[in-house]
Image 1 (cartoon, rainbow, N blue to C red):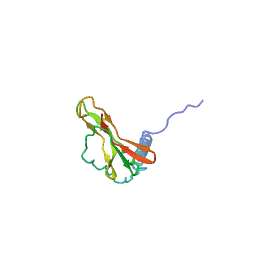
Image 2 (image 1 turned 45 degrees about the vertical axis):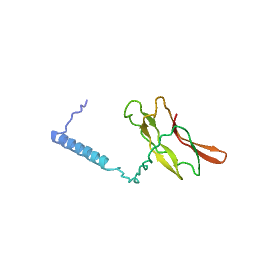
Image 3 (image 1 turned 90 degrees about the vertical axis):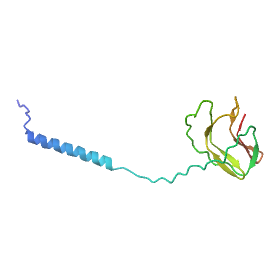
Image 4 (image 1 turned 180 degrees about the vertical axis):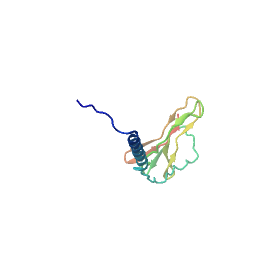
Length: 135
């Protein structure tokens, strides 16, 4: 009958432990320094500030010559005070071009007022912009 007895010396075990630790440290360094890709993003240009906002209390329609651009993605923050309503950003027809009005919190012009956002519709072959207003 044979028995297995561990015959490795303490110095051999210490050398194996040092080798294992060195290999682990090398693996950590390689994993931290490899595979990292740095990409340069194109410069972000925020939309231009809107012209001075007007308070409209009735809808108005304008025949426009082109579709509005795609809307910007906006983050809705916390209202500055009770009673403020979020007015989402939208493209407004300004003379002969589209201008982005950023979303913002606004206080209604009178109690019970509701913001009716702008719409873009077709009537026959005409493109119509119906501006937003407080109702």
